[in-house]
Structures are given as C-alpha cells and as structure tokens.
Length: 117
Length: 108
Image (cartoon, rainbow over all chains, first blue to last red; front, side):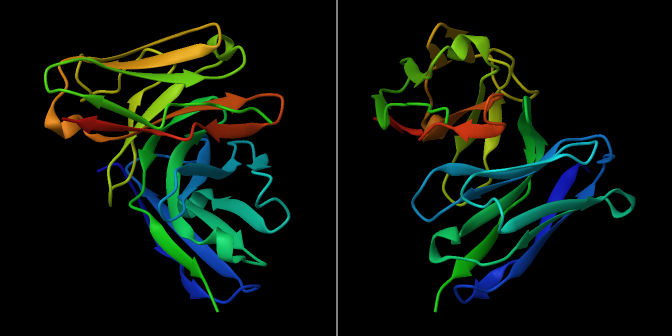
C-alpha cells in the first residue's frame, strides 16, 4: 500500500526543538519532490518546506532559518527539524508527496505540534 | 509574494452546481491544483494541472483556468461534498508553494 506515516511531534515550550519523521511505503522516494504542509487550529493550509530530488530545498518565509527539511532515501524517510519554535508554529503537520510544480498527491495523516508554555 | 484569493464560503442546494473561484495575478500561466479538506482528515487532491482528476475523483468535479482566475466546479452537489476547498500554485519567482485561503462549501 502506498502511504506516508508521520511520527514525532507533541508539546514543546517556546524556543524549543522538535523533529518530525515521515516514513514512505509502497513507492521510491529518491527522485520525488516531498514536502511538509501545516494547518494551524481553525486555519487553512500553509506550505512549510520542500525537498527536491536532487537535494535542493525550499522554505516558507515563516520557517526559513529555523526549520530544516531532509531526507534519507535508503530508509524512505523524510524529516523536519524544527528549532526556535514559536507559539504560532502550533499546527497539524502533514508529510506530503509532491512539491514545486507537482501537485501534493499523497498526504500522511498528520501530526500535532503544540508550542506552549 | 504571490497571493491567491478565494471566497470564504459558497452555499448550494443538493443537485445544484457549486462554483469556487481562485484569483491570482496571471494564474492562467501557472499550474493550479485543488484540494478538499474535511475536519479531522488529511486533505485530498481533487484536481491537478488545472483540469485533471486523480483516479477516484468523480467526473462531476471539473476545473478551468485562464487570465487571473481559476475555477473549480462541482456539478450535482451531494452532501458528501461539504468541505473546505483550497487552490494551490507554485510561484517560480519566490520559489514558494502558495495556498489560497480556502472556500467552505455548505450543502443546504
């Protein structure tokens, strides 16, 4: 079965760090665009970051310099390292297949990240 | 940065047609993708590259894009179509993906 399964997340204090992981199964991630998209409580969808097949990365202005997207092709894993977390980073984070001009055609179930003191 | 606009809400009776617009500067020159989002669920891609439907998406969902407006149309609306709908593009200039603010479709 083709799917994405996220892990990690949880509650963290402002200024803290968290790492999200995403395991892909049923397809080869090595030449794919893969991304993270988030949805804050009661809000719409917001693109966070994208990892291109050749290793190039893209970030939204709101997370650039604080978040790092990476991938381990051998393990079919995508990661999002989140540092200097802020209250407004609180959201459900989705791992997604797709990015740049390609549509987001496969979504994980999402992981809640709560930043609060 | 590139901005997309959508009406906040659209209400439609069962069996009628829902039209959801997505406005953006020269959006007709970009690839537009559309997603359906229901509470507590992951988003679902319903249209890609303006007009194409993924497998499993019914033919009564269609799309167009030209000039400064892209449109998603749901014909013969059913109760199960009640959801938020989001348009999305890749902005080459900023190297950012951009989502519209979303449109809530209510089936009366």
